[in-house]
Length: 558
Image 1: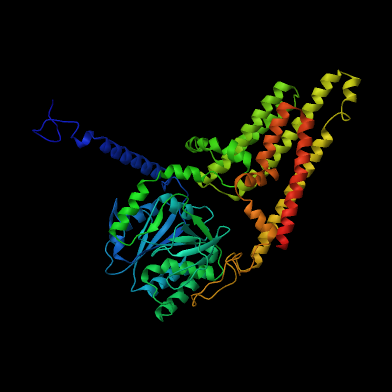
Image 2: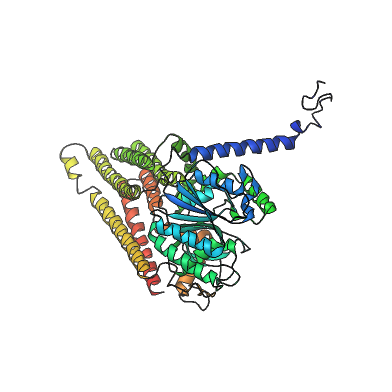
């Protein structure tokens, strides 16, 4: 045997050499995978490749925990390195004189250091930043250990919303309880403030949009006065973000609940907890979780099981090719036009090709939204363009089917007078027009209902309900809770009990969403003819319209 270069003078034994042990290889592979994930993350959030940052971040480095050693330095240095990769304009560090590891790191956005004497001073420093900022303000403690994707879900959202990162699990110190309803935080707790019926926990990361900065400043100053007068019980210096969230919610500010979605984001209380939290980060395939999150939940039966199961594999190639969501939308329109052209032939082989092209067009229609979520390339123009193109594609296909049915009937009747007689009288154009009218009516009703719901929400003091005092600990009962306002009626309760299993998917399919419509068109056109397609669309569409109208009427009286 040759000598082991790692141990001079000792024979090399692969069985005892840690470099050749299977466990060592597995650990080496895991480290290699993590390095690749870090490199992928750095490429994805390279500041030179993303839009200039506009968010101002306040980092509360007020406890010795922020100096705890971590990969890449201390916890504070690790967090600021993550913030550098996000669209952040500047970082304000609030520290204590005795907080270890609280010095600013070099590189990245400008940093401003403020030394604070306690909880009240921390809150006033946040209020000062909110008063002077002209862009969204994020507040988070330096003891947060999180995946970059978990932070980016809020801080890199193009809408820069007012929101808070929340997760599942029981409330524990540094993880206070919250209650979320319909994607909003409607109640938030601290060691002083109570939460009735909590269903999530706050993970320490808070962002406030431009529209609510004045409210944030007022709330922070009010909380500072209460803390200075010891009117908040035994609230500790570590609860700044918890207090701010509770204050925003009780002031009626709509705060979006941003879930961690399989990622980790939590605060740590010491070195052991920090090491355990970092190990939890390493166990998660961060890029894979991000890819899964790009696929929208709550889609229809056909979209969920026949498209989204494999369309996600097109997202990364599209991103690497530099395709934008709008470009994918254009490709989807092109495939729909190709489908319409093949349908206009009217003969069976052409109908089969048209059905395949229509299916692929719908796949790309799903991919454009998935790519937008994956790259966070949202825009009002993109949403409007997607909605308009959906209608355009569907009606193009209607025209192609009607023209193809007439062409096939004309070819069967022969040329000349026979073909003319087989024109309008034997065509399906009336059915095509009726299908267009029905679908237009459904869209009009849907958009009108959505607008009415939005208007009703704006008439109240935000989704969090009417303003409540931040100086009292108790909270109101949630809507729908026993004894609370808004308890659902019998019909709504039955509807909610059916939101599982086969009944759930039947409820999804009966309303004939776009996925089911595309599948219905493709299957009936490929196997039968355009007349069957339009009759099926009209029949199912009328049932869907009646079902949705009935459900909305019941909800309005519940």
